[in-house]
Amino acid sequence: MRYLVLSDIHSNIDAFNSVLSFFKRKKYNRILFLGDLVGYGGAPNQVVDTFRSLKGTVYVRGNHDKVCSGLEKGNHFNDKAKAAAVWTLKKLTSRNLSFLKKMPQGPLKVNENIVIAHGSPINEDFYVFSDFDAYQIFMESKNFITFIGHTHIPILYEFNGEDVKTTLLLDRMIIKLDKNKRYIVNPGSVGQPRDRDPRSSAIIYDDKLQKIYTYRVNYNINRAFERIVKEGLPIHLAIRLGYGV
Image 1 (cartoon, rainbow, N blue to C red):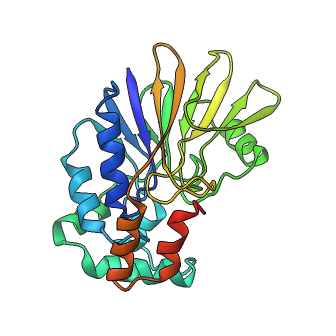
Image 2 (image 1 turned 45 degrees about the horizontal axis):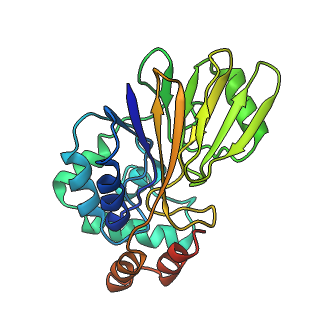
């Protein structure tokens, strides 16, 4: 089976639509979504409406999904993220608000080999930024492959039973997995990349061939910028899109 793995759309409908259009030309069977449909961007309802219309999705919630739906207060958010969350909560339709509130908490087992989570299978809000962070997960979890989001940085951690090897995921890479090792993979962000490449990031995982295919997708950043400005959200959230930070 081939899985399209997406994360961190963050109310960026322009990026989301471009990614979905791009992958129509690729073969995949199911979508794995790792959380944060909303937050930051100017089109929360468009993103949630589009996501709800998709078939074959398996998903978990993200920290912004929780705060933007009122499940948490967002006391740990910075002022710009908090302002966007407060605005999003007011903007969401009742149907989309209900959907966000019911998104399942990770980790979620997709099958005997695949687990998905937002931040970490240990803690859904934990950021995995280093090989040491990954090592802690490998010690706690015995899954062959765990997909995580949250950091907005596309990266693969490989564990051979002793050491963790880190690989940054660039555009158009093909990575062959070893059944004798274990993996943690972050596909990066659809709506707000932070690896200094402003293009949307996503991967396809083929569990028959045991290969990961990485992709970057161009989208209309100016239009996403204008949506944020039009809604009166913090200008920083618009500016950062063009820099991929």
